[in-house]
Length: 600
Image (cartoon, rainbow, N blue to C red; front, side, top):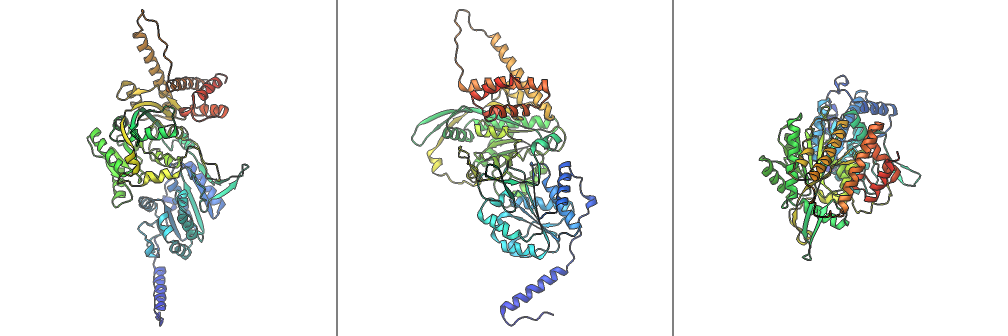
């Protein structure tokens, strides 16, 4: 029997010890059965063998979204629980919704995780093998989680570890809380941060350039996953169009998305296009819904769509537009508020057509039936873009494809062309001169219920949409098509079930058919004989489109001669000539690549 101390503090201490003793005496949940664990993919087996061989305190796995990082991490946890290396598991993830998702996935393989654990609980119940937390939760009370970690031999899974660098508080909290852990597994599926905040427990190695670069212990990229059929091919349908807006000085400006212009004009034209009161968004949403219908009619009967918006007010407006287009209400998910996780889960197992989200469906959320996306946000960091596109790549069966609609903005076109690029976190690297940084991500995720000063100084007047190009495997296809025309339908109507190679073949054929149709129209409508033909110089945009078509034709011919993938041919031309992907290359760069491939 415990005797209470004579002072209040002593009484509290004795009661706390008594509570801990009773907690320790309880029977823990049964260990997971490794024989009933689902089979692992090749990359998971290879990484598991490497992990078990090393037996190091820290291990970092980088795998593309949709590759199965959760299953891999839970298998390691099951192995360590089974052999007695650990007694408890702690998972740390970015959002409240992901806590529930982790707990459900763990329960399916016999690992019980408490997703409702709160810092005020202090101790984990023995009904569970451990708990699921958010980075913010750890940052608010690192001492609580350090004590939990020290009480039992703990294995910590840090999901999307780059979030530990979101703030100094989070990073310091994660480091302080989990230094006593016997094992730590870091997971990420997206490019690391663009800032210089070191990420806790990540190993950095100094290269010959003097910069410190993050090192991973296992890497499985999008290109490998695409080759293995683990993820879907993603087609990007980039829409340009004419935009007009009024500045604070009362000046009316007009610009065409996709045409060369200053960064300020690009940003204002982009913002004008995304305005729900113009024609650009309704036209793009109609095109996206038509693509969704095509997928549903040909092999993906439950295919769903997701519109990613910049703020809450705009998200609601987009939902109304979708209701007007489809006749069905769209699911709206605004933030980590009460009921958001339930709406996401319900949408994931339903056959509803569309969801509109601001922040919740940006990273880690698993809705395998998402196959069509509309990137209608001004966030443009590689981190956010990869997180968003990662929602559409998870493959369920052979041949499924995904289609993402986006504004024809040079920076976005570059990111779309570099889907297969591997990125690491580099400390001290010079920042990109385009001024794009993680502040844009923060603004895109922040609620904007009231108009700010910027809103009052800027007035979108009009915007129209037309298909500019289709980006796939680093290459650009198409000659442009107005919204609602048969030429646009040719691309929107691509079959829903295609292999990686079939996508390239079909896009090349569509482009050739488009060029042939243009020639037939010109032949059927010759200029009057009595008039001298007038030579009209092409605009910069028309010249770039013509050169892109010529380059793609030459790349296709080289592919048939060598059997090299289109993406590898484009990558080799970039290596030889320099410059960005063809979707955002200048006229001079395209001309140089055309001259180069003619010599190969």
